Length: 222
Image 1 (cartoon, rainbow, N blue to C red):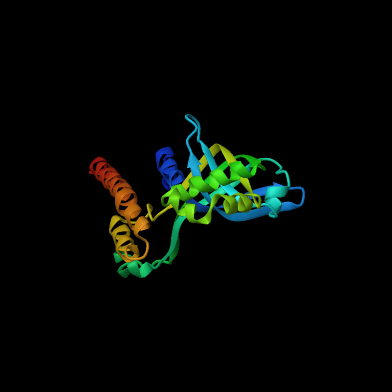
Image 2: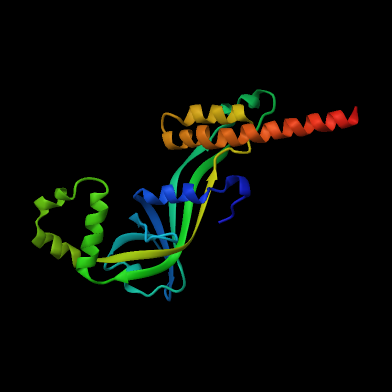
């Protein structure tokens, strides 16, 4: 993934995104070609390194049956949205084009499949427990859960590198960022928060630096 410096997430920001269970695309290459599956993942901190992403796949999925060639890629798309130039206050003086803002994390690592139904069921229980009490499975019954577990395979991606990108209008004028945040606020609250807490301070500092440089240059020319 191409990431200009001003769009790069910090390691802490990427880790915070990884820490929250969410659906992500698991992409792997096999002898039969590329495969991708949208699946719910949760993150396990192994104490050092980038940790591990865990999920489960139905046993009939080719990704669960065929050995993967090379590393796996897990794409965690946090949110994205169309950005209209009408939301830019500066558009009145300098018309601009629309764009698309987004936050995503690409996590790379070694894929390990666990054929043991008990392992897969434990992973499914952990995922459930991170959303609501594990007791929600009690009504299903252990016998039925054990039967269902035989139909799935546990999946681990032991992460070796993590790349985070937030293309969130950091290159715009601060007033434009505020305009985008206001427009996205109702339906894209997480993006609006990022715009206000990360993009806006970055842009304000950038524009202040440019103003200082222009002032310094002006003094030298006088």
